[in-house]
Length: 504
Image 1 (cartoon, helix red, strand yellow):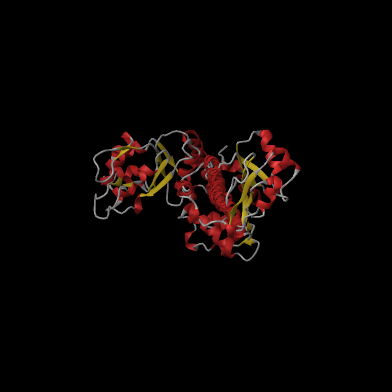
Image 2: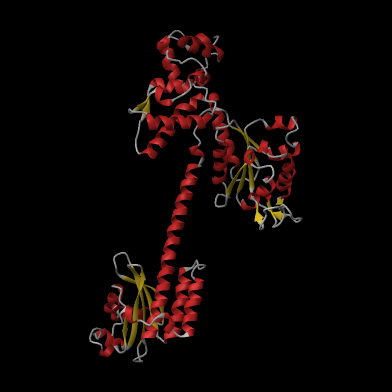
C-alpha cells in the first residue's frame, strides 16, 4: 500500500529509542564534513532499526535517473536485481511519494516478474526531499518476511531521509564553496603573479629577478618605496609565489595601530589582562601561522614594540599581553617602509639591531617619475581592466593624452595613475581618452610637453637629453619618458642624428 505523508505518525509517536537515534544523527549533522561516512552510518542505523535485509540510497542524477550512492546487504549482482525490481517503486518515490508494501507478491501495482523472481516481500521507499525538490530516495526491503514494516517504520525512514537530504544539500554547498575557493585562489594567484607587476624599465626588471630568486625562501624581506609604488602588491606576489601560498597572508598597517592597543593587536592577550579583555585572544602574529606576515609602514612601529618584534624574528616566538610564557610562531616576514629606514635608525626612531634583522633581502621600488617608459604600458593595462569592470568604455588614448600622462610628475605614483585612468574610463564620452578626461593638475607637470608642434622646446629637449647621455638613444628615451622607437621617430622628424651627440 502507499502511505501518503499526511498519514505518517507524528514524531511523538516514534519510540524513545528511535527518537534518540534521530537526535544523535541530527546533532552530528552540522559538524560532519564527510558526507559518505555520515550516510553510510545512517543506512546502518536504518537497517538495524527497521529490521530490513537490504538498503540502497539512490541519488537523483541531473537527467532524473536514480544512481545508487550507498548500498547495504547487496553485492553487485543483487544490486542490479534490486534496481530492476524496484524501478517502478523508485519512479513513484522520485515523484515525492512515500511507498510501503506489506507483501509485494500480492500487490498488483508492484507484482512484476522481477519481483517474483527476486522474492521481494516487504519494502519501503521514501523520497529525499528539500522544499519542493526531490534529491533521491531511500529504499529498504526484505525477501522473506511479510508484514515486516509498519507506518511507524515508514515515519522513521522518512525522518532519516529528511536528514539525508539536509546532509546532501550541505555536502553540495561545501563542494560549491570549495570550488569557489579554488577559483578565487587561482584568480588571486594570477593577479599577484610576477607577470602582473608591469614594468620594463631596468629597475623593475632587476626587481623582478630578485623576487624570483627569493620568493620561495623564508628570508625576511624589506621593501622600500614611496606611497603608491605597489609595496603591498610586491609582498603579495612574493607570498603567492612561495610554498606558503595556501596559508594566510596577514597585513598590518603599523601607521594605523593605536598605541594603547598595538601590543594586544599584534601579540594577543590573556583574559583579564586589561580592562575590556573579556576573553583570551590570539594576535595577528599567531593568526599568520604558516603563512606570510606583512608589516606595512614599519617605520611607524612604536619603539616599545620593536624589541618584541625583534624577539619574534630572532626566536620565532611571541608572548601575549598578560602571559609569561612564549608561543612558537612560524611565518615568513615581509616589511615595507615609505622612507629610508636607515635614516630612521640614525635619527634614533628605529632600533639598529632590528633594522639589520629586517634588511636581509632589501627591495627598492622606484617611483613612477623615474620610470616614465613604463607609463604607456601601465596606462593601457589599467584602461583594459576598467573596461572589463564597466563593460565597455574608451579603448585608447589620444596622442595628447598620452603626452600629458608622460609629462605628469605622479606624486601619488602608480596608484595615482590607476585612479586617473579609472576616472577617465568612466567619464570619457568618446572612444578615446582626451587630456581633459584625465583630470590632472596642470601644476603637476614634470616638464614641458614634448610635442614639437608646440614650439622650439621640443627639439631642444631632445637634443639636451641626447647630449646628456652621449648619444645613447635608449637612455635618452628613458629620461624623456619615451620609447626608443618613439624617440627615433622624433629625431628623424627634426633631423637629429645620434652621431652629433656621441663625441665621435
